[in-house]
Image 1: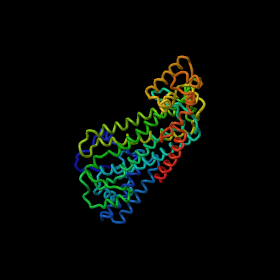
Image 2: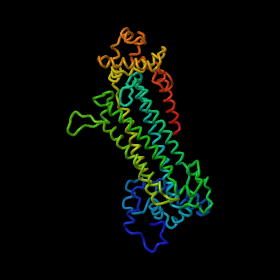
Image 3: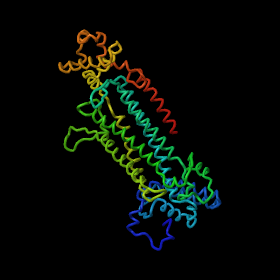
Image 4: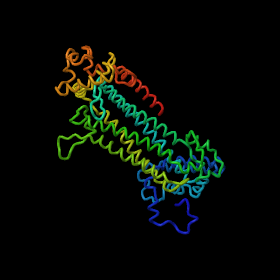
Length: 463
């Protein structure tokens, strides 16, 4: 059935029907459409447009549709234009001519906006929960190796020693910001559009505040034209998905490297790796590579809707039908990637002796030495030069930091004191970095404790 047609002498061509139809993807909105329509039926009853008995019949029929829609074959053979016409057809099958009243004063423009908002609100809640689970997995992995030392990198070159929990807390912070982004996106989604009509507002004096309470929306849209053409809330959601995927991709890249034979810092579980059809020895990090690859799809989803919206005149345009597939895909890829990353974190084993040896044999202690010289009155530029010369000499002679004895260090340059040799041990230098946010053991222990508390607060906000 059509929700329009009186103006037309003939129906749409078969090609146009196929080209413009959206039920094959917007069927995902069926439960949102049912809930929104039930609330609108109650709003019509409050205005006397529906009797109490008619409202009850409609709400009961919508409930039936919602239950039936849980059958995976529910849409088989349907040729309706979109989910809204599909639901109205199913409603007509149940209540007959009464179904024609449900669209009194309601436009598909506001109905689409409401359905997407209801779907996105639930999707945000799912992603917030998955983010909290991943952050919990990272904290658990940090807790298994609280004293492990690894090299920190800049330019993919060993730079300074850090604690393994400090490294994992860096990703915790990224995902914590993502959590905040989804909370913000959810606030933008959580605005009631009903009452806006097609663009000029409803011609019926609905109690918008009552409808908002019915659907648990804390806010009501302020401008009917804005509502009709607004997809900022969808772009906010897609941006939040994109930043999650960006962070997951960076973590995946790290762990792909760190689990390689060249690094061998971490071992990935059999359950998140795969083999080769030809090479029997292979254990490939496919789970992480897929996360890294799927990030490109989600970035494309954001770009797709962003570009679709950039040239549209006020208010609704049919181009906006193209908002749904990017949203559905981004949610699917992001939620799947978060679940996968949590399983990877649970399966990961750190081989602490290997990164510790990498830190000890390299010159990640160079900055610690230079700063110690400065603490003893040597201008930092001079301290930087002295330590740089020490590194150069060591590189030429094949010496590791531990090969330098206190007396030899003091003989190398007059600025060095024998007691400074303690800083040739990476663990000693880290003890000077106890500022909040630093990798000092006490600072990291405090940061871990704070992270656990923050995560608990995040989780409590989901209840």
